[in-house]
Length: 65
Length: 420
Image (cartoon, rainbow over all chains, first blue to last red; front, side, top):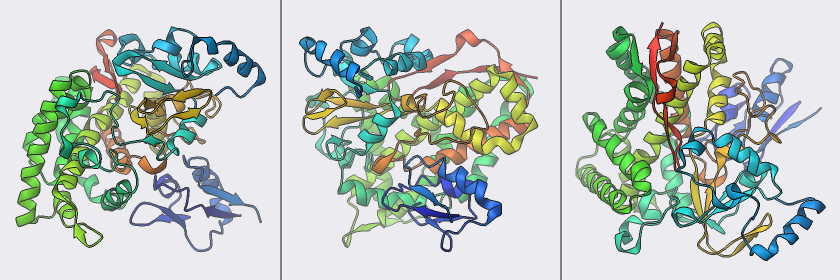
């Protein structure tokens, strides 16, 4: 599983960072970016779904392997 | 939106009543954002509107405005830039005689009172101070403040959770962050209510407090230009755009925004949450038993009791969802209504403290997403956690005495509670 953040949609709410800081980080403006290449360790798959389901800008998507 | 064949037929049948007016019931054509019944329970009004085939209501009251109620409409309308302009985000404009050129548009309260491109550079100046990392240093102060406030009333066995607690937190946090005298919080509260709450329908009162706030920050900005400090006003004074320092009027407006938008709104959220727990014993006990739920609980309370409705102006005639916003029309960005749309939130009418799917839009969406959202979220979390640590048992002393302020910021203005 891999997460992808659409930088054009992200408006810096930072809710993904608050829910899954092991998967994403935010820049100086609060805009999110994935850590590493976005690959989600199995143990964090629930977190990946949770942060995706809480993004008010629909900026996060999950790509299955 | 009328996106079914039946709805479109109905829409056509009603066209004799005039374009741009949605002629369904009184609520759809004559809602009143200051009606005490609406303020107590806006949820059933939004539900009724949403279920009709034309869920964008209109009223002629207070100069006229539109009220969308569906999540999808709010998502779409937030992206309609620059057709829906944010230059005058209050729903009632000041009469021309009270308008001041240096206190309108992007000088007024950027970035919320600006459209691109000014919106972009003013927002970039502000955001680094309000990211989750940017508000870490405000957290320790907020925790200490919450404990001190509770120390002041815990032995009484009761307090007004809105006035003695919720209302006291955001003005002090933002005063300290800006670098202004925390001893002036009672003045700040008076000024902000004068602009946003009491002054919304009283133009002269609003202009008076607008001037007081601008004069106050003009002196602070002048002071920081010659005596820099370690505070947000100084940081804004030192920010450059295209090689030039931000103009004084813009910095004054940005400080105005911090005060006006950062106080009334957050205290409404904290107050609503405490009102909820005081009247819902099952939810209160659940949070006492499971404090690890605070992350989802704060978001759910933000969803359910979202306090803020900013306005936009149509900068041209805009056809949308079966209605026409005429150039100059006010549109209330009803994000609180969107948060109750059952098409997007399962059991939207219920507070579910562990709600997992929660794309709520309490802080708005798009380019005008609340710049201070992560400061507000932190304040709310700290205020509630600290309260629950100290006062796990509390009930409403007089449920009928609770009053709700309205207009563009909804929240309880008095919440008397008894401890134990």
